[in-house]
Length: 489
Image (tube, rainbow, N blue to C red):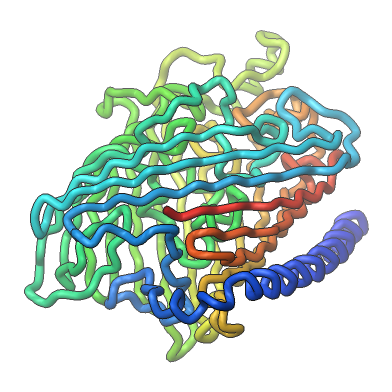
């Protein structure tokens, strides 16, 4: 207990120090970008549009839609836009008693990632549209993406051997079934081109997409291009959603929308191996079910907010940690190997809560809680069996910088005993593996400030501090500063 108290006090001291630095960066970035953009500020703010449909319960604290370098197409039957996101990160050397094949390297290192996306769409009629996105991802990740459950850059692709050629990220048909005559305004975006939608409706999407496009969304912590960068801040770490290495799957989403609530269900394909690029095209064997209920109701009286309840079930060729450890203890393998089993379909399931609460016209508090049955192999997203997140997001309208954003967040991730024993005995997960393990929850603090410089150009300094990287008290803590450049076209 004294050791845990000491760690907590040390972490609090570091958090306070980096929070102060983040606030300094917040102020400096704001003054710098203010000087650059002052002459265009009035025209830019007049052109800003809200990001959500008129029936959404959130108030003006929601961030406005990002500005673009060039005007959008005037013909609302079509959509053409693009994004470019560059993230530089580095970590100084840090204490480590030992390292393994899947450790975060303890020596100084730096890495820059990039994601370039071209969004297209065509509206066939008032209820049907086709959406296709082309993407190119490259650059590098710290330690090739190994060593952290809550990795510091959601844009990185963990497998450096994947092709660097552009690929189809999303390709889907979107159909809207009207369940009421009354219409509401819809702010057009790459995932919905309609200028207005039925107030009560059923939306169906079929094709290739990313599950977080529609599930576990949060206005303050879901966008790695303008908000937080950490995997377990932008997404629920225990939500092992169906995805290939790049984060996409193939399936169908049904979304019932009512002014007071919504209900979403998705059926999707699972990868052949943990975090693999190839999907299993036998949905009667490997498949995933996802369910989310959203209630447009704040926790605080007379203040808007959203309560989201999420559940999922994955059926795939996943190993069982206890069986892998039993093989090792019986002397059948030199180290536990979660992949050492014949093809068999096992079940992994989990639950999550996603809360969003407006505190004032410019401040949003958000929180996530997640849990999964950690006895089954972490397979698609990251190696987290339980998570708790709380954070604050703010936009710059308070200081006449409506396009600016800032945020702070703290997340604590954990794994169950079977998963701990597997790593302690030298087993490797698709992300973690120090060779040994003295278990402790992986605690992460992140702060950022995104400054709008001019038209579609944004820059964002940020910092993350991680205690017990990879759940290991024998390594760390480590601090990772970052700098992001983002462009909207």
